[in-house]
Image 1 (cartoon, rainbow, N blue to C red):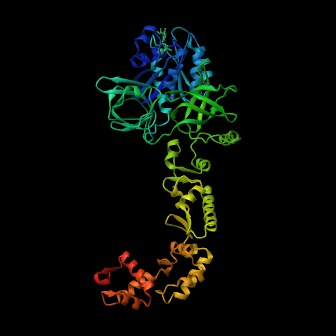
Image 2: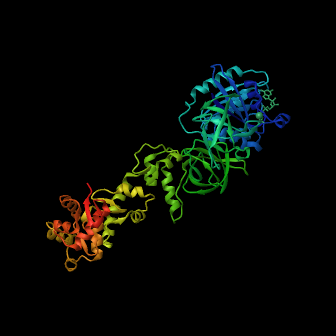
Image 3: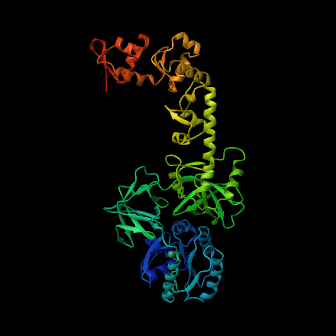
Length: 584
Ligand SMILES: Nc1nc2c(ncn2[C@@H]2O[C@H](COP(=O)(O)OP(=O)(O)OP(=O)(O)O)[C@@H](O)[C@H]2O)c(=O)[nH]1
Ligand SMILES: [Mg+2]
């Protein structure tokens, strides 16, 4: 299936043509039929000579209903432009064409209607010239009469030719179904309709709806008037939602693949076409089926920042248009460059931002995004419409390679400086480091650490006694030299003072794993613990404190706390009568 939206001035015969082609009534409302005028969007479809199906979104031509027209053409990539032979090019012919151009619609046909009333030649020539100057380029023109049916077979084959030119639909992309209608069906509940431009919908799917906390569920699907288990792009679809009240959604809302779209009320965009120099400060942004008031802040010669009155699920590269509802004119086309732009707080920030935007073209660019954002979650980029094909540095964090190298250097110098300022601490706390480097997540700190730095007990420092300040390290080396072959002899208190090992220095050495503290002022070298177990295991079991003291060649000052520590660690067990056994 492919979908085509009509376009053209009021009363030029759009609905008559759709009716003649499809045998279906596009004017759904009694009021429309009574007044002979389309007010809201109409939907109809037919089979073409090739066997393919074309679905029409029939739009109103009256100038009052341009917003409805825009909701219809927004999500549709092809247009059937209708001009009446007897009336020729008119204001809404021009406004509709300007809208198609602003949205970048590249595929279309011209139907010169009411060809039974006047020579279609002049209207066709004028219209083709106007159209040729837009994104549609040169289009085929067919003269038709909705009244006599003349030209309809030619128009059908022309529609078939148009279908073959359309790009193949992308069915593996996430769904963003802009709602163009919502209504209630007795017994089924809420139904919304829209043009599915990409992706695939299945009964049972969970979808996101802006403003709803819970996902909504697809209870039923219709396309071309028939219930179906699934619908793939491109298609007109009607989606029956389970348990979603009708007043929760309407035209301009979107049903979304969960987790794949970033909702934003701030975007930086490039104006396309010839943007008016005197762009008003408030305009209406039309994208998909949505129309949202925006405040415009000029940045560069053709770039502006838009503040939306309500957030929309926009992606980098989206086309949209700005319209001045007061003056009835399309103010310009829009290409979305950034859906999560930085705030412009500092002086000169706007000028700097304009420079950045000057180089963006709306094509998703991973390397560029990383360069600008430095650190960003993969999921966040995907939700902006930027495909991710890079390895995260930690968790789902992606980093700009140059920034990551800078951070690594910075981490090394921060740790060194901290060690200087806090000589007795065994390293810099990870969280302090995270804050100094202004990192949003501690896994990033951990990922930046490289040997000889290591993380130990929540701190980052050099491994082992290297982490000790030189005087403490020297004292530890002296202890090792003096007591290495008498591992269970602890230096006496005055010897510790001589060595410069006060309580703080001992604390630092213990945290760094260079000394083992048994009690205040009782320290051993760390390997003493394992050695003691080996010696004690050689004794007849159970053994007494005195036997242990002798075997270890030490004093009660050491033996008592040493055995208690071994008890606590489960290496020995104390039995009644103050004897112990080694647990093997
Ligand atoms: N003679 C003749 N009359 C036509 C033809 N097509 C449409 N009309 C008449 O022109 C009038 C307007 O036709 P519509 O089809 O409602 O025009 P429209 O473009 O859909 O109008 P809006 O939806 O209001 O913009 C009707 O009275 C039609 O009968 C045609 O090919 N020949
Ligand atoms: Mg109509």
